[in-house]
Length: 92
Image (cartoon, rainbow, N blue to C red; front, side, top):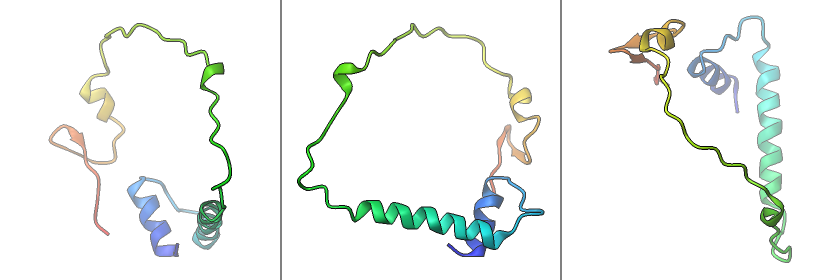
């Protein structure tokens, strides 16, 4: 991942890169990506699947409909809106 991709991710996430070292962030992203690629190379053919579902005690609750936040309240801190919705910049 290069610096341009980091800048794009931050822009699409509405995060500021001000005062941050883009090169350091790029290296951290690449470290994570390399680690993930290493995980996919591990041979698990002879490893038995394990599931802990019998030990899991799921607690279910009844869904209750409640009033949601108003559209105006939800959008009041949005960087950009259009037609009453969040507007995202999808330019590359």
